Image (tube, rainbow, N blue to C red; front, side):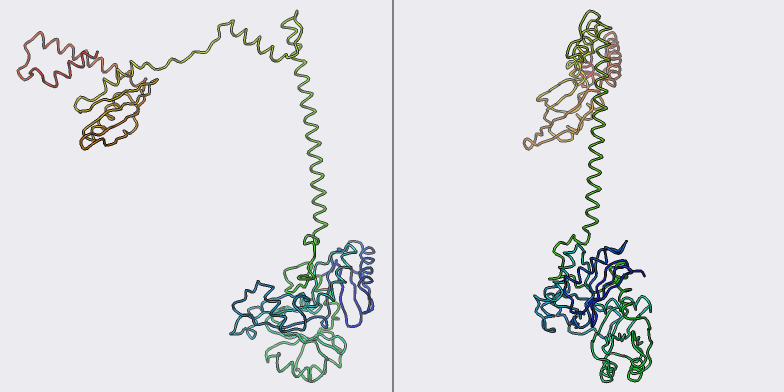
Length: 488
């Protein structure tokens, strides 16, 4: 995987600066400003290199430990974890930059009954802040601070497909990093001299019988020494520096694959948007261009509208001269044209038919015709307005109000459900709102007229012939017919 960014690696005796394919080494005692100037020079000399920078502290600058977290402490509470870490390393909580990670599920040997465990890696912020500030001052954004061992583990995991528990021995001269891993996650990390007693202790504490051991960067003598005290091991001939550079490329390509990043706490960027400053600048430039285009489009559209308005006014003036040859076009031409148009319409007797309101007498007649005669009720008020009617009456039973509403509905009214309230123990007040249906009511009136005519003929027939003995004076049927005839 080709690395196209900027990488600063702290070695045992020198600084390694990698910018794309260009590399440079500086003495270990170089000042932060000199390192930043060298990085800036390489970035300018390299075309296509990204300006984002990764700093990789050496093993001697890092602190590693495993914390047993009290169940009362939330793993997301970084401040509590930092103060808990202060008890295990010789650095004040206010002077460190630390990151924490939970062991993967495959690390069963690191689970405790007292609570969850967390792997912690820390560095002294005062030691690294001058370098970070100097690089930032050169206009280069520091995005990550990752130990070089973590970068090497990421590269080895990518190349050798590490899975499950395993052990790594990273040799750098007469020093070595003894690391126990689960997949690509470090569970144990010791930086010490490569000597027999160290290897024996590491084997007894960390190396299981089924664990694979991978050795990186060892000479033939060191590899023979390791095999004498560790046993069967696998060797990787690729230099350790190359694995660290490849691990930096993995960080750029897969940021979420790295478990620890010390660019936080006191080493956190002052401007959280600094890593994406270039992208934000491009976005602002694109927005400015878009606004300029919108303004130019609005100006062009308003110019076209003004031209059309001018052409319309000229056409109206020409039409006015043709219609009124002896008149000069007035200033308010459109108002004059509208006035003349209204005057012409008025001279042609163009008027709109005004709808007359519905006759209240006709609605009242329909109401009286539709009221039931078998039900007892007392009408208190009738309000008729343009075909709409409010009828207020009193009944002895609530069902009587429903009977009245049903009768009005059959008589040609659109009736809303009656509103009933109890006045006393034997009386109910009811209000019905209805609207007269004129089209249907015409048929109803015709049928009522025909019924009244037939009843009138029947009455005349009874007057001409002796009445039936079953029909007596005061008979309700007789009264109903008489009432119907009288109402016509």
